[in-house]
Amino acid sequence: MMAENNKDANRPISKTGLVYEEKLTRHYCAWNTSYTEKPERIQECYSRIQQLGLVERCVDVPVRPARDEEILLCHSKKHIDLLKETHFMTTEQLGNFSRSYDYVYFHKTVEENARLALGGAIDLVEQVVTGKLQNGMAVIRPPGHHAMSEEYSGYCYYNNVAVAAKTAMEKHGLQRVLILDWDVHHGQGTQFAFYDDPSVLFVSIHRYEHGMEWPYLRESDYDYIGEGRGRGFNFNIPLNETGCDNSDYLSIFFNLLLPVAYEFQPELVLVSAGFDSAIGCPEGEMSVAPACFAHFVQLLKPLAAGKLVLLLEVSTARA
Ligand SMILES: [Zn+2]
Image 1: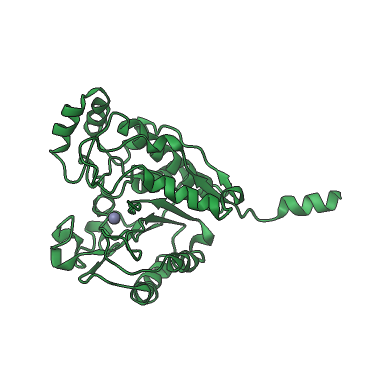
Image 2: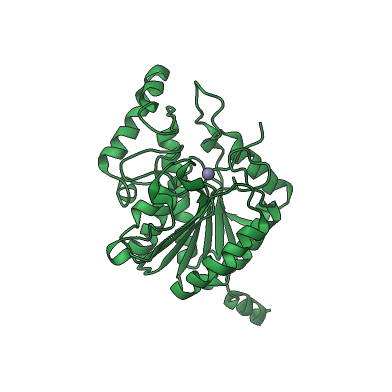
């Protein structure tokens, strides 16, 4: 019996962490219900995880408010303070303030939710980095990959994946982090956060359509490859047609992403996981089958000794 226990204690840890919190459904756009970033997004996602009996197989990682010093790793103090002020605004003031930004709405709970989502993401990533968990998924909102140092953008306020990567590097000494952004939109906030940093290989697969797709940036094209010491570590894979399917995405994995990722030898793999390239998403207009995302995960697992964390970005809930 004793020997059995010892054997168990020595067994490699292979647990999956899951971040979800009902509080994160509080914020919504009070004046425009057509926005795709709505509470049902994470509720539907989590209820499907429950239906499949997966919740019991995961370790619950609670959310907690991210601290200012953590947010400051990627954002300015002005950015933090301005978001704090939205808590005290009337609906009319929130609407007016939103007009200064691109695809952004504010709600009195958004600052608290952005902190909670980010805190959960940081803790999940830290538990994977320190070996308490093997891998994990954060079903969180607001998303993060469009948030820039001093600009809210695309329903994003704090850049969850960027702050989590910075924490892994600054607090835990990691030297090579791969961030894959398979959301159908360009993760421009993450690109800008690490554009001159060779310790983060940022790969984004996104709709581009020769610059005609949001966020309409020239910087989303393939020739934006990083600068200074980070030159060669920013890797955009712009798609100039809609309707891309499993074979197109798997071809990108096998021919572009994986060869570069293996050469980089990351110590941690983070995914900005939007599911708007899935079949049926009106925003994405792509044709990736849901089962194909499992293949993406399996293809990434051999990297970084399986230290893999998915952070939800945007996917559209059914109406
Ligand atoms: Zn998206």
